[in-house]
Image (tube, rainbow over all chains, first blue to last red; front, side, top):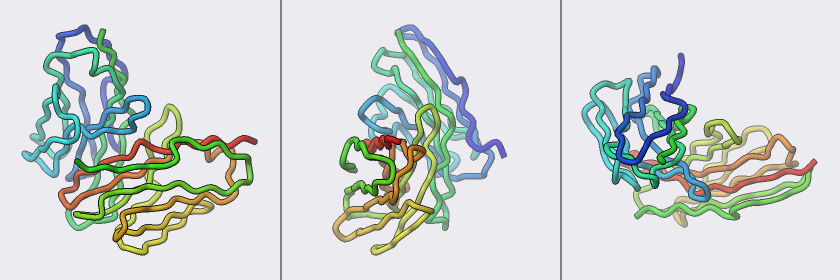
Length: 115
Length: 111
């Protein structure tokens, strides 16, 4: 199993550009989520999904869109990048139904700079 | 707003010292409490998932306890080693599976 795969690893955008951060998992996890990591602020939840076709907002959803058309994929879209979105983005997934002890499995992160 | 607080923010100890950190979380709508270890330039890795009040978990020199009624968990490291240097994160999972992290405790262990 590859686990949780994030692409790209690094990205530089100009203000106003759009892009999609990709996240895929091959563990048949129902739950997937996106976090951003900023210095001194830990991991903040952007959006999450409890299954295909179901998404919900986290703590800091503004400026980001998500969709979940398959169990495996959970892309994060930045519609119009802003310098405040410069951050490291982590995708994480876990089992959900009936597996209360399931921890999150993280991807390697995408380092995004918006100039 | 779900507030997960961790203390201290950072900790410097000598090799061989034992140490502990605190995580406080809302006691309502509790589903699970996670602890993760996060080394620089890597991704967080799970240490423990705790679900029941009074739970105690142990992995080698690291252990954790859980009090869901008062909303806190402790992580203990016995005989700290330089390789224990990392950020330790706790995360609170609600019944809706939303998982909220604290800001972490950064541990530095000096040889």
